[in-house]
Length: 237
Ligand SMILES: C[S@@+](CC[C@H](N)C(=O)[O-])C[C@H]1O[C@@H](n2cnc3c(N)ncnc32)[C@H](O)[C@@H]1O
Image 1 (tube, rainbow, N blue to C red):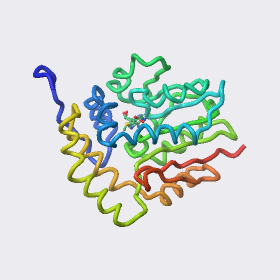
Image 2: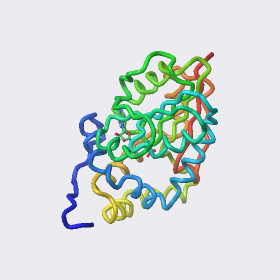
Image 3: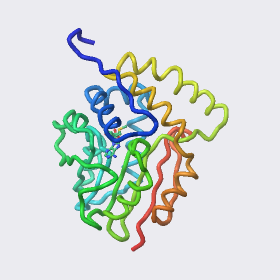
Image 4: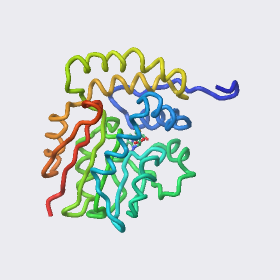
């Protein structure tokens, strides 16, 4: 790290107050993409590929990438020929991704600045866990989706194989903060990451909450043994 580079030291609490969450992401923005690749041992690229496949976007479709951060996934999704807009409430994250050639909008997931039935598909990757009221965000995503449209949520989840789950939880709580200290511009944010993953619902619990928000045909698939789960759902046509 260059001597002149300032390191933030700030993390949100698990109450996930929007201003705290937004400033925490402002603080990790500069090195966000690199840190992801390091702490996931390169798995992030596979997870993004699987998310893209689950969305199965077609040219000309209108797509919302919510909690898009630096737009790293938005660029990937736009390669399908769909029109994809990145939305996030962290100005720092959006600024760090400004070089990316995708439309970007400052927006809160709990009060989306889009009309009803605007999108063929909505996706939210590693962001729903950070929203203060995820159920409200799921209802907002439903509102802006066209009838017959689809949702894909990519989120950290619960490994299914017991012994692997134990090792993974140890990694999360002990090793991850150390690794983050070496690469991130705000290592404390990665303590929050570990704690928020532990407190997040399991695959089946999240599926129930997606259905409770009004989505239909909710299903999921595990990636990397359940470290990540992709939930897919549809808005009734
Ligand atoms: C871990 S990052 C994920 C970024 C990106 N989706 C990716 O796959 O790399 C989580 C993002 O969610 C955003 N976020 C959290 N709560 C939000 C909210 N209520 N509205 C909009 N964005 C939110 C944060 O600002 C942050 O950029």
